[in-house]
Image 1: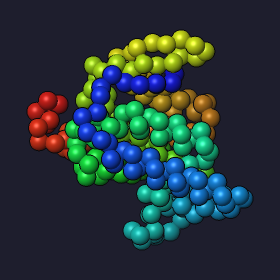
Image 2: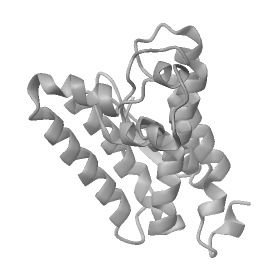
Image 3: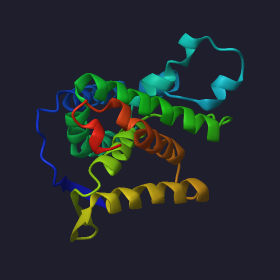
Image 4: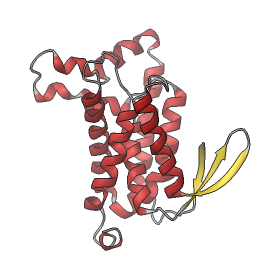
Length: 216
């Protein structure tokens, strides 16, 4: 299912959302110029769980939990993540404010990486992508704007206007299904789950004062 738009207009220009999209797109453009060197970049800055089991690593050595959020494996990967961030991030940013939203996004991404590590501690496959952080934004939206509508394309050509809680609820259930079944391809489903859960749990602490009572 492909979300096309939501029914909640932005109240302010989503500066941080646009900034994050621009940074991710620029970094992937840089990746695309490396040719075969992109593999070295991903192994250097992607998050490889097994690396953190081999020996004592100083705190600074855990940078892949952060840098992996800004790397992607393909144009479809980065465009898909940034499209979801564009759809849902503007409204969450509206209610958090720019600085709090940026911190919230990064914390959700870090929590997603930690979740993936805890479930797959011996994996030698590098994990990259903003989807864990974006899932955190989705988790916040799930609770904050559950009565919004999400116009959704259901292939091949069906359009449905789902309530946000149904669209996002179905999405997170598919992540649980694939994470448990381990038969949906090499996607970090547990990172998505960790990010989504973190967004649900922490979003209220990042809301602007005028919105806090609405979601408690």
